[in-house]
Length: 240
Image 1 (cartoon, rainbow, N blue to C red):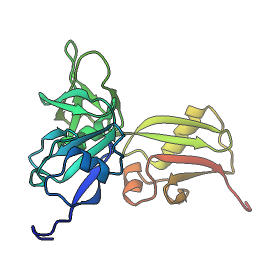
Image 2 (cartoon, rainbow, N blue to C red; image 1 turned 135 degrees about the horizontal axis):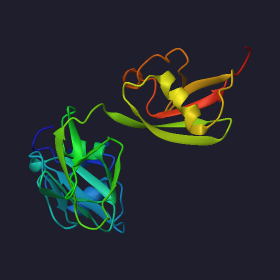
Image 3 (cartoon, one colour; image 1 turned 180 degrees about the horizontal axis):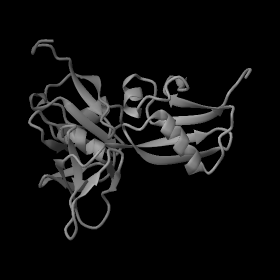
Image 4 (cartoon, rainbow, N blue to C red; image 1 turned 45 degrees about the vertical axis):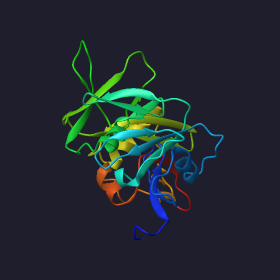
C-alpha cells in the first residue's frame, strides 16, 4: 500500500498483547479513532497506548492525534485509570491492575536468556516466573528489571480431574515430562490413580490424548502443538 492510499492498517491488542490488524483511514488517528477501530464505543472508558518503534510506550488521549510513522501497534483496554510501574528505571503506565512477568517481557523486548526481577529495597531482588502476577495497586510503585537468568524457567499448569470435579494448579519446570505432571496432579489432588485414567490436554481445538507422549518434556510437547498449560484426567472410554 502506497502513501497516497487513505486506507491503512494498524495493529491493536488488549493487555494480552495478541495483536490483530484493523483498517484506519487517517495517518494521524486520534485516541478515539483508535478505540473505535478496536471495537469500543465512544461511551466506553477506553485507554489507548502506542507502542512506538523506538521501544517507548506512550498513552494517547481521546482527542490527541499521533503519527503512525512513530509506530503502528496500539494497546487498547477498558479502563478508567492507569497504574504506574517502572522498568529499568523508566516509568510505564499500564491500563490494568495486574500484569505478568511474561507481559513485561513482551512489552520491553527482554530476551529469553534473561529473567524478569521484581526489585526490592531491603532484600534481594526477586526473580519472577513467566506466569507470576503482580498487583500494581499496592502501596508505592513496583519496579522491575531484566537480569541474569535465574535457573530453569517454570510454568504454571492446570490439571482438572473430570471424575473428582476438582482442579489443581502448580508450577513445573519446562523440562518436566508430561508423565511427571500427571503423577504430580494425583499428589496435589490427594486421590489415587485409577487403572482406567488417561491424561489429556485441553486445547482450543478440543482434547488431545497424551498417552503416547508421556515421556516428552512439557516445552517440547508445547512446541509440537500437543498441549499448552491445561490438562485433564479422564476415564478411558470403550473396551479395556
